[in-house]
Length: 428
Image (cartoon, rainbow, N blue to C red; front, top):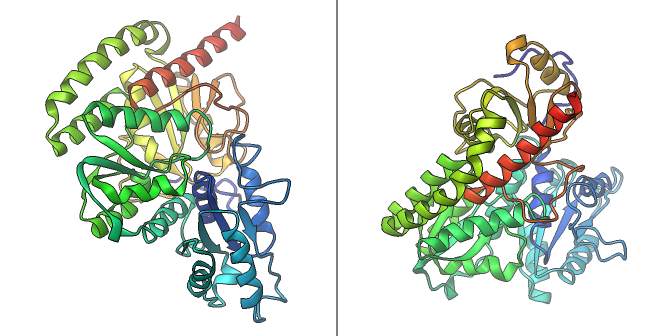
């Protein structure tokens, strides 16, 4: 649901379509992204590089950026720009193993033939390229990420495919930065796949180059994660692979179901039971004290990715916490988005979120806010704040710090407890 607007014309808590395209390109180290639009498209990269992702390589101070913008003006947009755009695409081909093309509305409505430009680029350089579907007027950042994955699927050469029933491609891993929270997420999901005797040959996206993504054509099983369901289906339709749609494996029960569903789809239930037994034997002793001493009765709010609202809510309840306020940085109705069991504020303004917090009765005032640092949400108040999701410019993962899978459950619980204990210390 959405509360009545406190500030009707204030910025809503969502990111534009192009942000998702940038995040996807950022997660492929040898991809170049050409954006046809005004120079403001350059500055969108500043939300990522040097702020949210300290390991980003989208922009290069020496002039070899993987992001190339046409910087077209209102006066230039009506002219024949084909020759200069062709030069820009050739330049992009020199900076990447694959080229993506996107456009802002003022450029897209002119009907520029980006497919032809990419075809000519590939013919002269051998570098493949794809047009990201235009969605800036109706889609948000998660649509942009999903659309980029769909564009990449079209570049897979299936003539050389050799699908194997033991090989797996994970499509839709949301890689919003190249730091060791998301790198560890990738490692954790691949670890669980290997525990079933399967080979994760390609993970989209994982901070790995185009050659790794191309290996998805050899997967006989395609795991479709929420951020890339359409791309997973498109890939399987081209290679003949079988699609297994799974949610983000966040939390203990969520990860157990994820593992069980994958095992059931691949006939590897015995391997899953052995792995699960060993994981729980390690995990439960680690969390027992925290649940009893730190989490039971703790009131928590969550603001973040709409695909994570439901699994995060379930995990909080597993720990003994009481979820009291949920908000999504994104539109409602994304495919594969599940219900959280509580009302969810979609795209609230900062003022709307603050009003919802203030409206909570005294016995439900939050102790911990798990949230991104977006549009002025920030901290404030007496509650503890745990930075989580895009964007978090004031927290960075140098050591492995996953939030998915069994290891992610332990790590996330550790971070939550640390914030809560620090709150108690400051209150003394």
